[in-house]
Image (cartoon, rainbow, N blue to C red; front, top):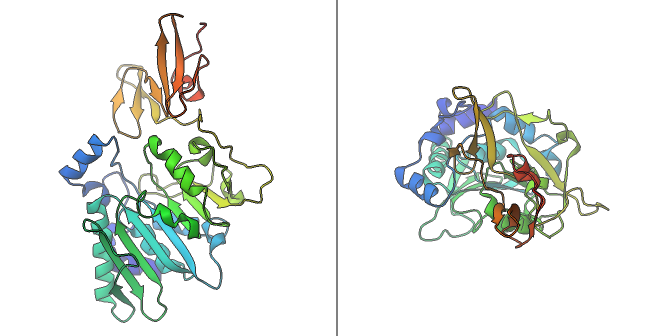
Length: 341
């Protein structure tokens, strides 16, 4: 209750526990932000963990198992949106000495920055605004909130976490990564996560076995309590619970639980949807939020190609240059088949 009251002081009662698809951080994006996202092939579709979902994620059986009882933990959030998860973690986890949150979209970052300033002004005896740990660039916004007495810090940065944020993965005890990113970035993400701190725990939107597009060995395994599909977390778009994945960095595994491989066949950004009006399937792209009737010819990094010489389709993997006649799983799920050459 005390944490919720403090969150309400910072963000306003109406913004804490918002549900639906039109919450404040979803509505706030400017026309220029939307135009940039469209040009770069990204989606601004937004949702966030509810306070109950954050509390569940922070239990000892999940992320909390990486927080040392004597304190000193570093928590990193990649894609922090309005900053509510980062602030709740800061308020709730005394073991965290530094919560570092990075958000790409300026209008969403501004909601968190305003909340931090409001909390400091309402409770100057407990919190103060201070200088960021790393000086921001000329076009980067940054804000730090220190807890008076303890020196614990919440830091919000507006930046691309591939340029600022992921570089902290090697010394973070907990990483929140509850965002959807374009699949073309998976190899770079995995290369960095492969260097994660031993014992680090990772909370992610993506199942790692579908996105580990790297030849670097994956050091993570799923924590036991998160293995059942019923282990869900309440979110703004699904208050009853949505599936996220929790992993621990454990290099003592004799056989890696998650197999590395550039030519991963399991990921697809496409979701088949049924249209009642036409009694027909259509396909929705969860990265760009665009839909189409035509069966997609690309999923993940696999593309459908045509061989005039053999009068048959074959399948080409962009990252590796590999081609094959057998349909990869991601395209088979959309309806493509293996044809005889």
